[in-house]
Length: 297
Image (cartoon, rainbow, N blue to C red; front, side, top):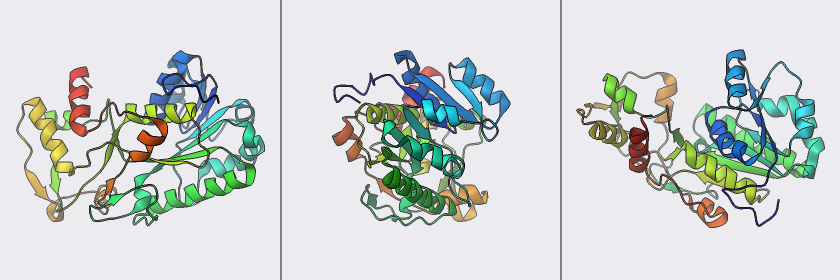
């Protein structure tokens, strides 16, 4: 792609999105008005109808053959999560994707900051050794390595994006606060980093416009914070009582929810600013929550 392309106006292309979910949809909303063609996979027929209504060519996967879509794609986004058997896209399509080689302009793999593991509230950046402490983090680390190995063998323009906790329209705390179901679970020294979905989309668009094969980027805002602070601020914005604090050791939680508290770290985002020139739309959760409230989402 031309170096003159700007993050807000990437050159047109054809994006094939594996596991077309929340973050991929935000990217598509940026690309479609610019003349891009977007094909997205989903497991559910009802979701396929939603994709079509949004201007995206839907594909049911597993199920439909995607060979022609891989051949036509100029860009590939992978947000389908790995499992105990590895990355599902690589299981089904590693050979077809490898055959495209450097004809592809960009591949983006959406990973997670969970690959860094627990740092007891300390800072991490893209050079921090990976040491996941959860099963999901381990799977993501292994999937990253598998994609990197394929990219090295086939000359693929791979970019890895490690996402912090995602929020945005439809994924904010306001509804639970209004319903009285929000909980402020307090674990000493617990801190998380977050990222608004529209900032994910603008970082991906910036990378598409300025590809750097082999690059790894942390996607998070500037304001890591304890989760109970976010709930309290949401309640204050709504003018509702702040939910009472519940000590972590006393909280009833699913194993999945409890696993999120197994790690505490602050994630640096300097690289997206320095290499891609990104200026975050929502540099902190206060900015993001205020915008969600103002938009009614």
